[in-house]
Length: 421
Image 1 (spheres, rainbow, N blue to C red):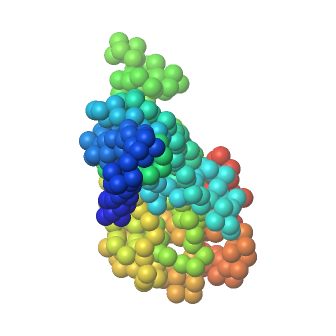
Image 2 (image 1 turned 180 degrees about the horizontal axis):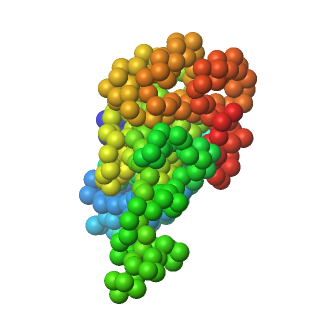
C-alpha cells in the first residue's frame, strides 16, 4: 500500500508539473514558454510510460546449486529476472530477503570455541545488487550463501526497486519465489572407550565394539564375500568340496535409547544446543554401524519418540527431525524424563544428552539407574560451567553413573572422543 501510494503521489507531481507548463505556455505565449513545454513533453511521455509500466508482469525465478547440504557448507544462488517489454530502466536494485533462520553462521566444529560467546555467530546477510538494465529483457543476480546453519531455510521473497532517469518516480515490488534449503546437522566419528553390549553367555561389558566373538566357533557355513581367510575350515572344505567357514557366536544386539534434553535453560545457547544435536546424530550413526539397535526420544514442549528397532528408513527420519528441532521445553527435563523412561522400559541402555544438571535431575537419574541395565550421561557444557557443576558431577560419579563431559576443548576436534571422567 505504501509503494502504491508513493507511485500515485509521484504521478500527481508529474501531471501537475506538465499542467503547470502547459498553462504557462497558454497564458504567457511566446517562443520561450512553448519551447519549455515541448522540451518537457518527451520527459513527460517517458514518465507517463514509466508510471504505466507494471512490474507485476515480471517473472523472477531462483536456481540453487544444492538443495540439501550439511551445516556449515555453502551454496550458489542465481536469480533470473525476465520482463516482456524492453522499457528503458536506469537502474534496478534486486534484494534477496533473508529469513531469520539465516541470521546465524555455522563454522562447523570451529564454532564450539565460542561456546561462551555465541553472539559472534550472528550476522546480518546483506544480499543486494544494483543493475543498469536499460533495454535488457533478462538480467541475473548471482550470490553465494556461506556457512549455512542447521535447519530448514525458506527463501521466498525477492524485492526489486527501480526508478526513472530523473528520480521523480520510484517503484518497488515484492516477488514471492519459494525454495527450500535443508542443512542437515554434521555427524562426526566418535571414539568410544567402553562397550554398551553383552554376549549371550552373560551381561559383562566388553572393552570394544565387535560384531563377532572370534574365539568361540558354534558351527560352519558356506563361504560368503567378506569372510576372513583365517575363518576357513579346511577339513570341512575338503570333505564337502566347497569352501566352508567357521560360524562364530554372534554378539548380542543391545537396545540403546538416546534421550535428548530439548529444554531451555539460561546456560543453553545456540552453540551448546548445536553440540547436543550433533552428538546425538553422531551417536545414532556410530552405534548403528556397531549392530546396535538405537532409539531416540527428544523431550521438550512436545515429546517425539523413534522406537528401538532395525529400520533403514528410521535414521533418515531421525536426521530430518534433528534438522528442524529447536529448544522449546519450559518444564524441567527431570520431570519429563522420568515419565518417558517408564514408557521406554527397564531393559534398555539409556544415554542422556543434556547441558543442564541440578539436584532434581540427580535424584531422577539415581532412580533410573536402579531400574535399568546402565545409564550414560553425556553432559555438554563450557569449561566455565563445568567448574560450577563439579559438585553435582561428583555426586553422580559417587552413585556409579557413567558420565562423559564434552567441553569446547573436546568439540573443536575433528573426531569426538567419549570417555569417563
